[in-house]
Length: 540
Image (cartoon, rainbow, N blue to C red; front, top):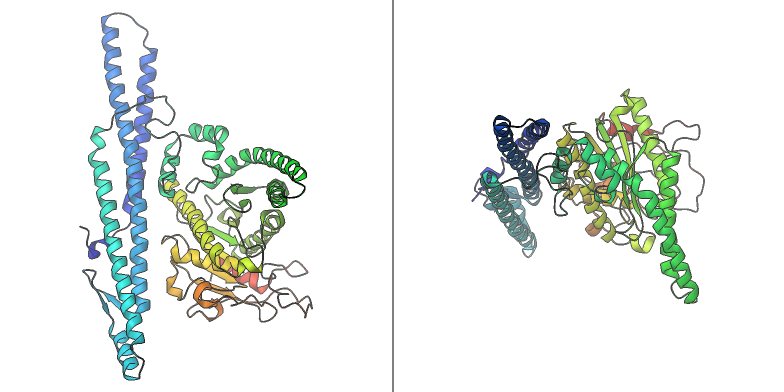
């Protein structure tokens, strides 16, 4: 069984190197297999010598095909193990952080005890008539951490055992398809159970021609799939868009006929169909309004409304990638174009201030969850919790794609506004380590965390911007569910709250809530935009 001391040393980097080495060897062998098949086909001479040569080439082709299959399996097995180790790295980090927050100590064997300073708190509480409350909380935390460590070690054993099993079976893998076949040795389409790491390894192992055929003929398979590179997702989703609009138009027509027949009894279904169609049409219009953008997400079926994500800049190769997550009342039909404008302003200001080439900075407008349509839905955190999972998967997919392609580890920032800041904060408590570098919250009802150490932030930090008046959303969420108000979160760095001149709507307690990403009336950036730009380019 893997020990706690051992698991703390686990890193996915060597396995990522193994994936790349297996990929390179597979590519070489695939070319050898193709060459042998070509030579065999070109040999049209007759006679015993020619027959002997053909037989030899057939034997060599069989060997090459088997090796392609074996190295294909090695790519996928190592990718699965890499993702498993990534999860273990994250879980170990979270256990250690939890121990720090709760006043616990983890020994080298994984045994958990109460830290001396925490025991002093317990003794003081007991002596002061606290009825053992601090001790009870500490004991509950200790039991929870013991369970978490046990789960980590069990998972680590599973990762280790599964990888060993696949490696031991490599020599028994035989080719089921010859050279010239589509994605030789690999599945023709992604397995729905794959992680983003496995998807990225599979996609990177395909040839340019094979990827192009999937994008052209089966874009639904990869358009919204985490682990696929941004450029390919954009091409696939653009190929899907016209068909989705056509289907939505047909749905509206059918719902309208049903509405008329039922004399208005099914008005909600008709309204939903119209909204879906308007979401899709707005997506198409926004792509036309903003040339050079990339459509990284287009999901018309999973949620209450269409989900979309549009990027400006080269997400696959930029040194700095930011993701903007808007909040309550935002949706594709009403908010996508404005969100693209907001991220464009932020990106351009970052380029201007840093002097970096545009190719080094990218921004994504992520409307990839069902933001609350109104105050009733925004009073709870269920949509933030669901959005956090969707956002973490999306960002981990970008990271996995970068790793598989060898494009490097981009500096990634997340900018969450309003309810989107709570969604972003919750995401940052669960995303795998090594993905998010910076978290910026503004106009925030809650940070999504109880302690800044809950965030799985890589190398940067957590930031907040809060105007000093007319933003009643700030801290409005209960700390227990929404997280601590980020303006009061210990360790958070406060950014500028300079926004455009106040509109004078003294009767509106939310009058400045949506001003953080706006330019000044003369088109110049505000102090807030300047600070956001510096976070984006890692200059804070």
